[in-house]
Image (cartoon, rainbow, N blue to C red; front, side, top):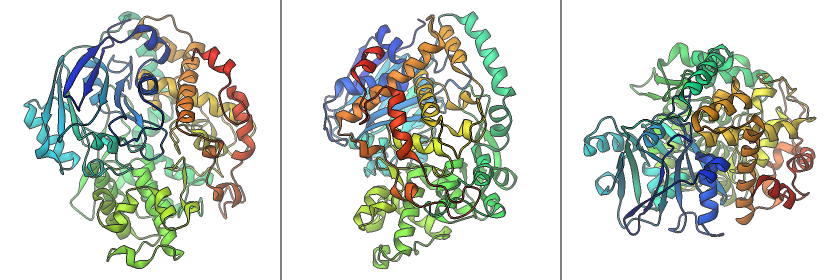
Length: 602
């Protein structure tokens, strides 16, 4: 295959750097990114390690299509054991950092041990240095990025770093690149902080050469045409960003409101936080990751305050809006800026605040614990902004509890049932009672509550590749499996999930043919994704997974939606789960069978 890159093994305890060749057979089985990172974590760590201890490993990995010129081929993954869930953490980010690492000639960075003092890593092509970051400790992601570019003397370098949240080991801490892009979920930033690692700065001046450039050129052209012709990737996302989903999901009756107590807002209220409103009243310009024709990101500015920055995305608009009982979008925009600077997962932060609001309004969270801060009442924009900052800075009694995530917060106050989470990770902006397939995906997601590991919204709402009824359960276990396997391959190839609105398994097989030279089929592409999914499941089983970890919050399976187009519905995950296990070739308790593992070469 064309040059993919090597492995940098950096032992922070010893201050050593080793280069290792990447084995072609391992790349063929797991690609790169998510798959290869999971394989390394599974092989090189022992069961039961402390996620925030020196035995855990933090793995940065790009895919074989990262930086090769394929549309939206720019992603990198951060793989580690999650301090939030105790299971696999595998967090994806775009921007330019991943491409820069690939151009420097490296496919994987394995970070081991713990540095004796705050450290950053400077990578320039084949040169690697560990440098003192003491002067940067305590700085936010924006200031850290600007300072590091001065320190390395190269404004073209790219920075991936943690902020105060990661330094304080918040279980919601993200790793930020280019200031506002996040590997956001699972507490990966806390693992980086636990290693006293402030940043990884990369400058790559090489070129990532494909094995079959002429073939890939034609494939890329066809892929680009499909992406631009697609109604979602070619029209909706470029026009209004991901927040275009606000009105669409609300009209479906699956837009979670007030910590999932409801799933519908009055249309005129929902529209106040829609992508259309964001474009009309707050947009400065569009933004795109490396090589991306979609340009779904938004650079915005507030009207009420002299603040600007990148975002918010759909999930963030909702997390600091509807689920906290707000229709006004401005508090959410400001909270988003705070999360970017302090390095916090916006979904986790917003849903945790929503849980705190329900705890407070029901009298479970005493007013004394607010220590003078604004009351946590649904609909309070002041509370959203204030408590987001306290959480990010790990400040005060309640700020520290919020930084642990909603599961531990609600457990502290004696009501864990109010945490809208799966495997201790907060679930996103689609009510699983109104969209049945996404609920099954939440429950079975290996990294905890997550929409992007099996985005059945494409089919159940957008009708891609075929329209399925969001309210029915028939066929959803098969649908979820297909989406999960395809996503596993896309994440591991180094491409953006949004390309799947327009591309299918045949297209990805052709992309890999051009990039790697493999004679790969669409069936092999899907089997690769299935292999990765099963390996993640094996990791979780090793770390103590039980069938109870594949459950939604009881509220969502026993209490129906009170109003709106999905009124009266509950999630049918308990009924779908046995069928899902069967379709996966697992036993009745959710364990992969020997036959399935042999078939996948595990």
